[in-house]
Length: 137
Image (cartoon, rainbow, N blue to C red; front, top):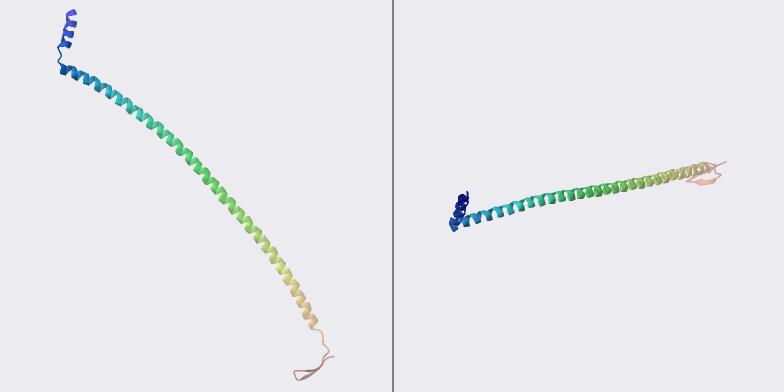
């Protein structure tokens, strides 16, 4: 067996420099390919983590936007309710003023009717009116 080991050792020393250089370049290629593979795996991992982070940020932004929209909607509804109450208050005031106006109109009408009744009393008048002789009484 010793002769086999000597033959292998002699074989190594008998390789020409080109073969040794090719074997050295093969080793370099293996190491460089391994480094590229590790870098690719690291890039994929980083991309995955960044996409998860972006997804979480988008979800947070969407939740905030929904909250803002809901708050805006509540403000609009509140403003509409305030406007409706204000309009109802104005309508109630106008209705009350209208009733007061009607009551005043009734009073004025009653006073006018009393005045007309008073004017229907017979007058005592003697003299001429429009060329006619008038005697009351």
